[in-house]
Image 1 (cartoon, rainbow over the protein chains, first blue to last red):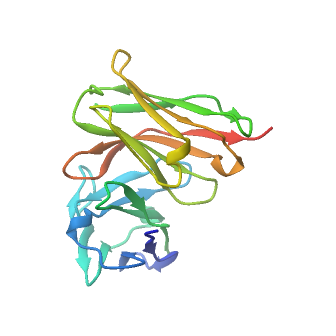
Image 2: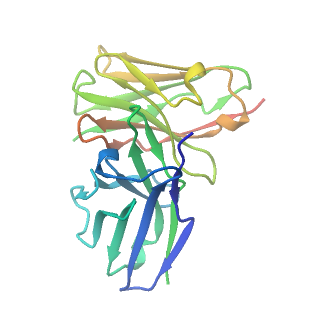
Length: 110
Length: 119
């Protein structure tokens, strides 16, 4: 069974830059998996940040960017702000036609 | 503006069937989208449950496939989920979500509804 891996937690200083990654337990993530990223604050529904690797959703600040780094998908936050403190989930669209979410990364801004 | 709203019983007994409906506004469920369900157990991450395509074809998480039924009601502009033989492990917030064909991501989320499985 395919497992999508994310760092469980990460911290960044206000104004700093952080890169969260999204990998596969077996194999490499490429654009063919259409990586997408979602932000979730406690008690709220997820919000879509990034689709198809690097396309920001409407209204998402340009400090959020997506890419492929090595064999993983990546979400980079440049100039982190206090309200970026959230859980971040990636999702990959598998060749079998199903989506699989990563376990999520809890980002702390301090 | 596209909006999705989940509804259904908040409490289901073990071994019974969990039934949820998602009301869709601002777009027809006959449009080319994947009408999806995602759940989140308390304190845990997101789990993709499955989708129903506008044609009525479905795709499910292999771990849930044997218990899952999804359907579309075009007359009411709704789609629904039924999960049979539930256990405490099915306790979660359930979200209905719109998925995009070709771009393969989920762009509009409902607010979620909490379902507890308990006797």
